[in-house]
Image (cartoon, rainbow over the protein chains, first blue to last red):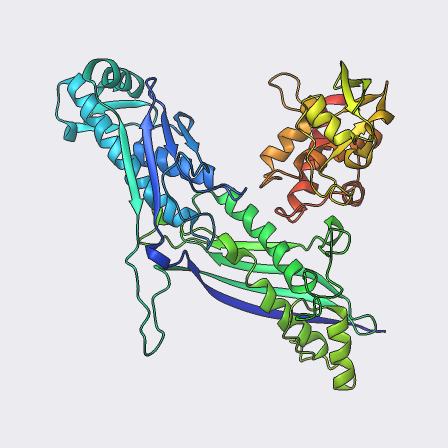
Length: 343
Length: 160
């Protein structure tokens, strides 16, 4: 038995969101009488951080403290319409809708504050700490809370905003099939190092190094968390997971977590990530969001690394020991690819 | 169906509920005692989301007969915090971003609590071993392992 090491590389252009029906997202923002703001969405936080990021975006656009913003998500009975949490669209599509809704609410807030301070709304600014002041004269100010109270009980005005983000729908060219699927792309490059045992066909991934370009990382810790967890899922898709191991034959499919293979904590792969920030013009504060692409480059990189290790090109996922051993047998033995010196 | 009275200690509180014959502990805790912190994942003892401590030892509550815990002491994630003060494990999970969807988190916390009670200074390998019965789909496990080691260090610092 010999363990052969291999290295594989993959890079991707990753479309953020989709174009079906213009991929709309809506957001509603309103103030409570104590000067807090509620953001109502139907977009869903699956754990990827939708609530945290839309909260940040709303606070930034409103000019109020993060602690004064609440996000209510995922009730499609009562919330405004949203296409959903998929296609890595959350930060970009929903974030843009939130900016629009929050900007409208901010304009009303500034009008209400202007009435209280007896100045023009154009002369006012927020300090991000819960106060609205006259530009150049910070002492002439009113708190957001007092503004909301005045709007509610004195002026009879709501501080609220509506936002929708809709991209220009792109039809499919009937001759070429060409269409513009998205408005912006994120990018990634990823290197996988692994060992393949030529007797058992087993693969052990030993190191992942990656670079991701996600626009501005609106919440760097959430971005990193998603990239680490997503790469794990990519390894799992590449090497373990399938519901139909002999597709289209349905037999021998897993029926539960005992037989549906996933790597456990014993198979943690060290992963070094570099996040490159290139804010996108049409993205909320430049953030495109990582989304599904945190898993995507791992699969081709693993396939390339297996080829590099033993010379077997597996083109059906997952890359199981069985497929590798069959490939080695067909080739008449393991055929390790070229190595760079020192690798 | 006749119900059976069942008394046990849940997070330091004397608790009495009625259970159906053959009811599992997870259902008894969630429906009977109203403790929703243990989660129903697979219902067959593979995912670890339902992990609770019985007399300090981690058990899969979905595979435990409710009547088997009569008179025993149980700990769940709902009892980890002291008032508003989070347990060091909870704090480490939060600060280390060791949860995404959060469904595995109560089971992970219970497995970790049992580990640190038995072994206050675990190695990385011992942490991995302790949570090897718990599946997580989001994090890739690394942040969870790191958080448990962080909490162990914090608890050691407090004890010293």
